[in-house]
Image (cartoon, rainbow, N blue to C red; front, side):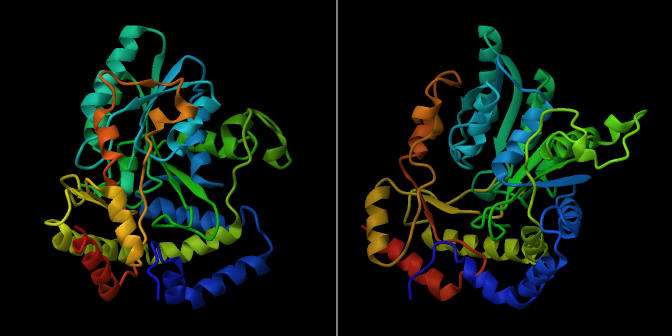
Amino acid sequence: MSIAFIDLQAQRRRIGPTMNEAILAAVEGGAWVMGPQVREFEQRLAQFGNAKHALSCANGTDALALPLMAWEVGPGDAVFCPSFTFAATAEVVPWFQAEAVFVDILPDTYNIDPDHLEASIQAVKAEGRLTPKVVIAVDLFGQPADYPRIREICDRHGLKLIADTAQGFGCTLNGRHPVEWADIATTSFFPAKPLGCYGDGGAVLTNDSDLAELVDSIRVHGKAVARDLKDRTFEHDPKYLNMRVGMNSRLDTIQAAVLIEKLKVFAEEIEARGRIAARYNEQLKDHVTAVPAVIDGGVSVWAQYTIEHPDRDRLAVHLREQGVPTAVYYPIPLHQQPAYAGHSTGPQGLRVTEDKSKVVISLPMHADLDEATQDKIIAAVRSFS
């Protein structure tokens, strides 16, 4: 039996009967776009993430774009983000003719380096070509960025803060969720995420009621919302009164039904992932260059379990020959990708990012990874020489 990198079917086997009932109920209900399950899921999601508002959307990339549209990010604006992340984080910036400024990462958590963020903002201000506007901090591999420090920097410079929790929804820092520092948190429900659906989906969470209302408008073609209807008579569906340019980014009802069931077991799965990661750490710490480190006070949801090895590529071949799948996140940082050649990097470049891209490799990780299978993975890693 082959080892799965992320065994999505294991969870389905575990909660299959209730999942099947939920999906069938959504199908039979007939409200297949933005149906009642969507509203229920948004309420549950907000409660889980300790946010006043949660609004679902079509995918995690749209979730990042929605606040940029709401804040009218545009030409001449700078958006600061790490380069050591998936393309979606930076991809949304040029959609609005803004410029990404890539910031280096911390060597232990792989999350954005607050000191380099500060230096990058100062450099952009000194140059005078761009206006600092937004910071996108990524909860890479499942753990929270250093939000207290990042929030202080954003406040001092007057920048908005997005917590990109596509890999990290459910993570906490000193018991607090990222949205408690960020203006808005975004997430993805891509199937391989810790909280994934059976297709594409995403969401934003915020404690800013005005921002939530604006995002609600933008995700449905710029429809009229309460602020737009004040002192105005319009007795029709508000989606037929378009107050601003928006997009079409809605969550399918079936996916919401799936996510309701998955959210019910999510806290237990986060605990299981933590136990699996701790076991990996204990068994591998003396056999690789580095095992994952989590920020003090942080709880990771372990979207990936990532180690470092100086001969990463040969290790990958060795593990594949032993039936162990691996993945490399990310072999080419975004600032070195052709699509982002015209964007900026912070002062003195991104040395840590570039160094880590050459040595990181991720091992199988999911909440249903049993000890016998994990032992085979550990033995395979330890047998490499």
